[in-house]
Image (tube, rainbow, N blue to C red; front, side, top):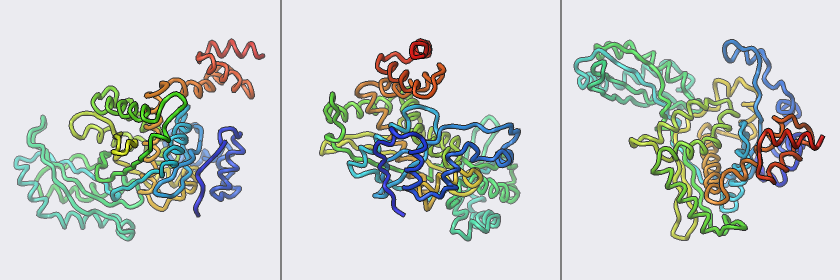
Length: 426
């Protein structure tokens, strides 16, 4: 089923009317609508089975970003996030990008690494060769643990052996299992494989296996997105398209050379990615860990994205980063709204989810750089944040928007000012 991801005037609707529009676009049932509309989508009994020491549930806003078009396919993107301006920026930038042809994405296979740490070895290079000589045996042993994965076309594909000859604890050998996990995030799969082969690894090397655990630096599981936007699409009332493009590229260059700026720059990218990961029940900490490790893979921390100017004068943005996400297992299958999020996006594979996530991350990055390069980040952000301040001051109903609008117009968004305004209106 193809959908139209454009959502004109969506923000002007109330939450119920917005939900009705998404229900109609995606073809959700009334039962599925109720999962989003009602406050008990996650039963306490289910929550209690997911993690330990449960005493209740914690809710966050569940939103949808529109206008996203990836490789010619329209996608409505669920996002779970508490920060104002994130969903608005992702949608608006996606609208501009859509007018320029949309996102172009690609990804590598769903390959994860499991690490087996071997200590107590006096001949680490000899141990490496011994492990490589038993490569096929180790692969077959790992694959005996997950016949379902093998049946789906996945499984352990290879091994790597890394040597750290001089550590404070003596020589260390680390064997990597290279595993195709298909549509799973893969943590449990690769951890089980690592534990399965550990006794045989000790026999082969004569060492002692310590850690047997996945790596969250999923550098063999990359997702990529690219956009190219003509200057005419980026012009504003106050700035020419060329000025906007030069400002964005200058802002990116700052992040490329300065780790202090890069940390905030990349946080902006993750503003777009994390809400999708949360909405689909995936492990956003794993995605964050891999992203920031990948950002310093060349020995210093730098930007995850790149922004350039084409020979035609267009703005060209790209991103490539690890994206270890799945459609099966864990909260992705346990949480009813996570399952519904996958349905709204009409996903066929984990790689498709990964590509959507990095595309929205690139859009979010573009929105932040565009704001920084023009009127500054606070103007739009604080206008949206004003609603939070109004609510914190005690405003309800129509007063929320009235107070927020007055604070935004005055460029004075403070809780004490909101309290003053609330008293005036009352």
